[in-house]
Image (cartoon, rainbow, N blue to C red; front, side, top):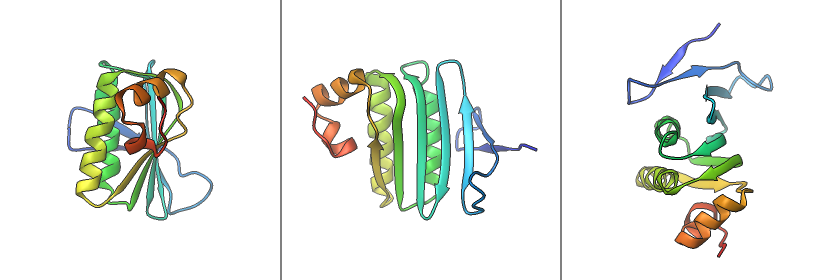
Length: 139
């Protein structure tokens, strides 16, 4: 059985998925389109946002909504897993920077992890944002 969880923006929704790994403390929310997939899971004071696909002007709003939901959980830390992201443009970068700012304003640690795409690494390196988002510098 599935229900819907709404964020601050009432026009978009995330479907509540099954609990994973049998841990009752972990909750999963997911959204999937042809171009972007986002899964949120939380456990032990941390929210992990696993992203797959391409982040651009068309899909950035969906990622931003997911990051808003993650921030609303009030976790101590948000990790954004980019291992499945093949492309991100400047609009996607803006989404990440806004989400980081909102998280930090609430005292939440925010980090983008597992950036494996050379395209995304180049974007972060050339814009000088790799260090603040991932803790690593590419250039």
